[in-house]
Length: 173
Image (cartoon, rainbow, N blue to C red):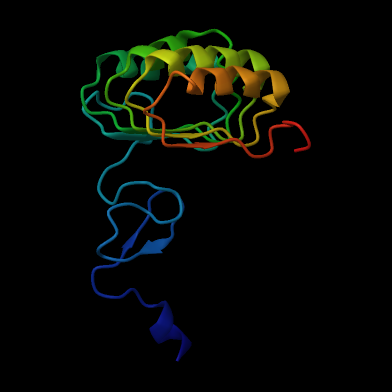
């Protein structure tokens, strides 16, 4: 019967961000990546947090001051999700902090407004940063010029294992 199928199974947990039911053994939400226990949620979270998650918060570059501070001081922050905001990275504060960060492994910046200038600043940080493994940049209007900056930086950066650049008006995209 339908009600039996909708009932949570033993140990299942519901994601606080997207409300998806996850299996007991999933350490983070399979849909959005929010950790099973805790997780980010506000820009005044502790410096000891390992994951900060800021989807759909209408954040602009000026709103990242706390996160910039955390990137500079944290010894445990491993993942930051900043998708669906209004970030350009043009002021350089976030990218400068990223350049010298030694803990961040995964950064998601999809669906922002980074453009060629933000991509240039991000590329400069990728030349220095040696810990970032995954970077999501889809839907950011990076264009051919921004893509060239990132490609040049990747010639020097050997730590980045995966980068997502779809839908950025690159070539025939």
